[in-house]
Structure formats: C-alpha cells, structure tokens
Amino acid sequence: MSDCLFCKIVKGEIPSQKVYEDETVLAFKDIKPSAKEHYLFISKTHTKNVNEMSKNEPQSIVEVHNAIREFTQKEGLEETGFRVVTNVNKHSGQIVFHTHFHVLGGEQLRGFGA
Ligand code: 5GP
Ligand code: ZN
Image (cartoon, rainbow, N blue to C red; front, side):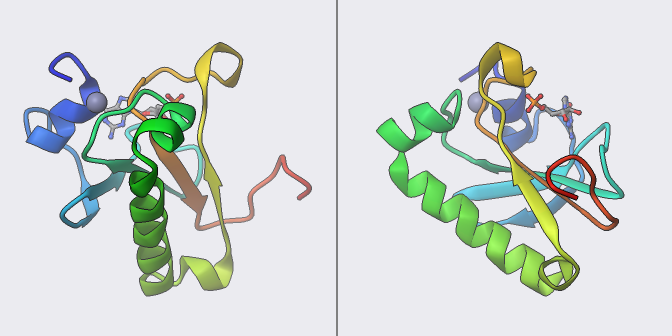
C-alpha cells in the first residue's frame, strides 16, 4: 500500500534499523522501544492486522513466525525469554495498520503473569 508506513520501510523509502530479512519477512528495531530489545516483525505483503492476515495471507503468519524463531534462537532471546504481541484496532492501541508482531525481551518483562 503506497501510503502505508511499513510498506515504505519495506521499499526502503523510510530508513529502519534492520535486524532480519528474507524473501518475505522483514524485522527492524522499534523506533520507541518498550523493552531493552524491541523488534517489529512484518510480512512484506501488506495486510492491516492479524485477522486479515490469517484470512487472506495465512502463509504470511507461518513465514513471520519462522523468522521470529530463527532470529530469537540465533540471538539468544529464546534462551532468556521473549514476548510476541500483535495489536488489533482501537482498544489495543494499534497505530500502524500494517500487521506487525512486536518481539520484546532483553530484560525481565512485566504485565502478563510476571
Ligand atoms: P502498534 O501500536 O501499531 O502495535 O505499534 C506500532 C509500533 O511502531 C510502535 O511501537 C512504534 O514505536 C513503532 N513505529 C512507529 N513509527 C515507526 C517508524 O517510523 N520506524 C520504526 N522503526 N518504528 C516505528
Ligand atoms: Zn503496508
């Protein structure tokens, strides 16, 4: 989508600090980190949220989560622990309507049973 921020990051029109890339998936540092390590994993194919993704681009879910597995294993985040979060619409606080999975870690996280 031409007016989508994360599509512009995929196309290189807006710079990002990439941490992972393959044919279908891109991951980069969140510009305003909520944890010591905070990455955003996206499919290069635009969908607006995870529900649209699972309906229209189900393969993208597998591709993104394969990338998260590879990255977190390589970087040691699997060992220390991490959290995956995806926001949908208003009550979640979603502000970018290109499906993304927050990967948070690098320190003890609070809020969900911690
Ligand atoms: P949401 O609330 O939509 O789930 O989260 C969007 C995330 O994107 C936020 O954590 C925000 O800090 C991040 N973000 C917004 N604009 C940019 C940007 O231009 N570059 C990067 N790297 N992250 C961004
Ligand atoms: Zn997009």
